[in-house]
Amino acid sequence: MAINAARLGSGFADRQDARRAVSRLERIAEGGRRHAVKATPQMLAAAGIAVVDASAGSEGKEPGNG
Image (tube, rainbow, N blue to C red; front, side):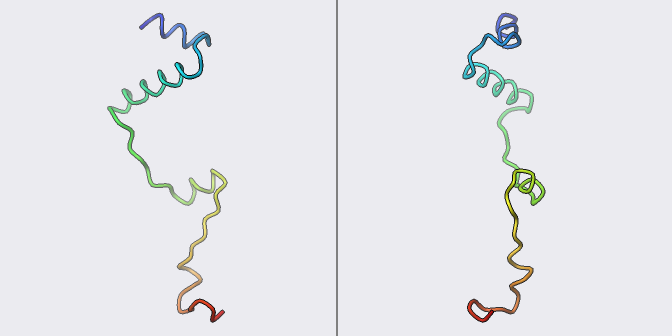
């Protein structure tokens, strides 16, 4: 484990091995499998995704009636 830690820390590991090792360490640190988190409007905005609240402006209006 010490050799692997040194290799990852030195930058000599290839990307795929490093990604796998970091993923494994994250799973261990989180106690197992990762759980999906529902994205909030703030999270989506931070990723550059526009959020439109369809229910706010469409009450009482039918499609095609302006």
